[in-house]
Image (cartoon, rainbow, N blue to C red):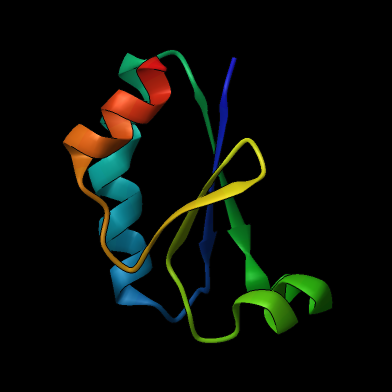
Length: 78
């Protein structure tokens, strides 16, 4: 099972939008979606700063700010 992490921050409206957008795609492909608040972890805050939302699949950065559902589906099918 693939793990899709979405790096977010609680004050980020785009983060909420992207989470809602990708959740059905992730579920359809049997992957796990984990939301990670970068402000709760100093290492994540240092790495991602204001670059949220960021999609990370199995530890590899996949997309930043905008996500194409077709590209995400293809990556999760690979």
